[in-house]
Image (tube, rainbow, N blue to C red):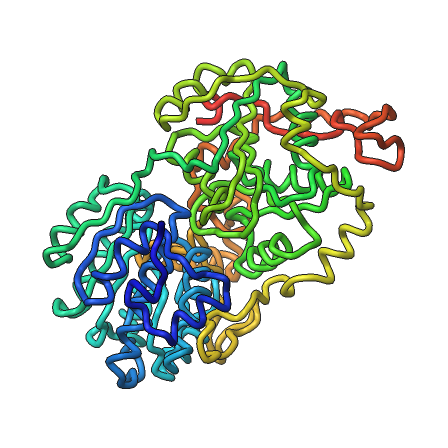
Amino acid sequence: MSSSFAELGVPIQLTDILEREGKSKAFPIQEDTLPDTLAGRDVLGRGKTGSGKTLAFALPMAARLGRSGGKSRPGHPRALVLAPTRELATQIDAVIAPLAKAYGLTTTTIFGGVSQQRQERALRAGVDIVVACPGRLEDLMKQRHVTLDAVEITVLDEADHMADLGFLPGVTRIMEATPKRGQRLMFSATLDNGVDKLVRRFLDAPITHSVDNEDSHVEAMTHHVFHVAGVDAKRQVVLALASGTGRRILFMRTKHQAKKLAKQLNEAGIPSVDLHGNLSQGQRDRNLALFQGDSHRVLVATDVAARGVHVDDVELVVHVDPPAEHKAYLHRSGRTARAGSAGDVVTVVLPEQRRETEQLMKRANIQVRPQAVSADSSQVKTLVGEVAAYVRPAEVAIRTSNQGPRRGAGPRQGQGQGQGQGQRRGQSRPGQERHSRTEGEHGQHRSATDRVASDRAASERSGAARTGGPRSSAPRSSAPRSSEPRSTESRSTESRAGAPRSASPRNGRTGNGYASAASFSSSGTSNRRSR
């Protein structure tokens, strides 16, 4: 039986907050690490996504800073959390902020893709806890808006994911800027790709707690592999799986396909939103807010949502396109069956994808027997459960426009004491020319070298235009560049032939019900062709 937070030494100021949120018992990773983290020891926590790691470091951070007292100086935060994605940074801040507020501490987030003016103001105000992505934090350090010499506690969350994204050099430079005497906590599912070097270099005699590893199974998560006869059968199965009343996430391999599928679901009477790298931060925030609300129950996403996005009560994850490698499968699947709740995971497999999917499951250590299904199969109907009411596309558009933050406006970052709003999208600083910044999938913008080269090219183009010189015939795109793999995002190989709507009954509905699955388009490519 798990221990209560009070029994583990968490102060009453924080246990009162947890009890109001319905959290009375600690999860295994919290139960194992809290005695050591509250005592100020360096800790390496190994556990997969959804195991409760955020609260495991948020509680000791708030408790120790609150107990030590004092006030942060402008530009000198007392605690730092590094996260690989802006979505994860935002959600970490949402967990820490109410705990910090109990001691009068403030928090803020720092990441790319948004104006840095709000972040500068928060730092000048003397924020206590910073939750940051490495790229923008390094920029602010170089601009001398922030110095890390007063940091008492440093946390690296999802360290293995930061390694996968190539952020470890920046993480290393940031860690070197923090005091060696400070407490350091690291949470990671694995220790490969250089994570073990960070442990040896920056953690002082760390105490390791391994609750579960990346390949361990969640008992409440049930895996299904559905073999379908072809592209048309796949469309029908996907439409059926999306039609239930509970929250569900559908994963695609490409941004184009995610956007297209969400649009088609909306046209079929299933309110849906998309999440991928071509969206601005404000659009991501808006779509996540809609998905977390009551109006849109389906999220269609690329792997940007596979880690760092936590939404309560996701009952079903569907791999519409099987991922390229087993880590992506595990992290996608981890969006359901979180924090002790139950959930199902479905992988929809075309005939040409069967061999690769079988190998994928072996690497992920998932033992499941494939089942040949159609949209009318009992296995599909069981997962769908109660079918949600049809929503007219016009009504979906109204719901989308009336709910959530304005496009590009996003919710406030920094949940602590309110650090102010950034500039509106499209505004520039007074006297400063506005340059478009290429924003990556995970909130990490381009390096200074890349920006200088890009600005020089832009200057040359501008000069050529003024002098009547030749200009490049290549079309210029205003869309942000994504850091998702080019091979999967730059080519779309799905069938583009739009089939007519069917007048046959579907889920008990005829002309006014869901659109036929024949009008529904989904990727029908194998993993091999997507690479």
